[in-house]
Length: 228
Image (cartoon, rainbow, N blue to C red; front, side, top):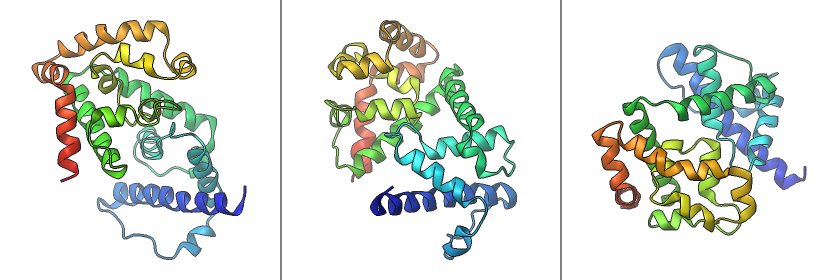
């Protein structure tokens, strides 16, 4: 690890530790703590090497690990109790994260599906603001010829399966991605199932039907609203 990469890892580790620390204190006291100022004390803690290792993994995952969802999954598994950051870099931690994503994406409760889609829309709107993307098409085509950002967000759990499924003609749009990306992340059956699943989601409730019918307009509204 060169000096620049090492510094990047340390900065990411500090962000991760602050997020982890916030959850620990909030679950214990009901309120968020103040931002950490004396990082030298943190660097001396036994768990710091695990935080560094996890930060390195996150930085080199190509965006496929969302550290916030990862940490939240471990807290949920631990019933919101303290757990050692050693779990971040264990096989058990990875399995918990994957199971958490699968459970979240497979949940068919209409209101939870809708909330997941709205949460995903807000995530995308925030990403677009950060990268000066003006609409859904700009977002969809971001890095589309290499490793599409939307695929990274999908596999990381930053956007839900329902959100991805609601994208109009996603079964056709996927074919514009590099062939190796399509082969690695989408089976032929997945692609065939998208229009079927979109109809199933739409039939769960009137609100989801409205999202299915006006998905791009709704997403563009949030994107543009966030940039005002």
